[in-house]
Image 1 (cartoon, rainbow, N blue to C red):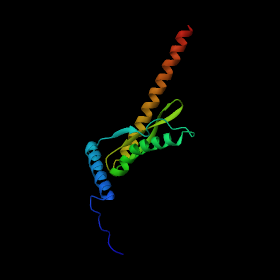
Image 2 (cartoon, rainbow, N blue to C red):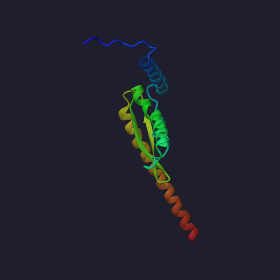
Image 3 (cartoon, rainbow, N blue to C red):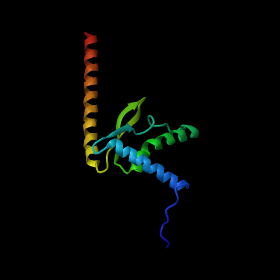
Image 4 (cartoon, one colour):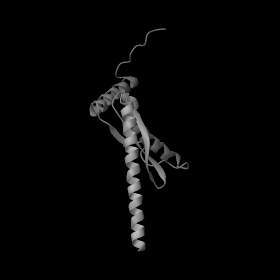
Length: 135
């Protein structure tokens, strides 16, 4: 079998590789050694099963533009449920520097605890508002 010959940069594959390398370098430069990029996991809440095909394809294209970043850059990414909009889940993605898998998991635990604490405080405040109004 003949060895693989790199394609010249003016081919489609070569252009893709050049853009991927630029994206990777840019994201890695933004993150440095200890940064975290937080972005929505998807372009909006989960889509309904009966979404028309054209709208679904548009949503998928926007979704891929968010989910491909870490893969192209070769970086760890996790997605976690964060909230709900109209009863539909919304997720948050965290992308970290190369080798930061465990740190991302620890950060996700901290964020989850903070969101749960904020929700508990909000529920308690809403409960005290209801009891105050009843008096």
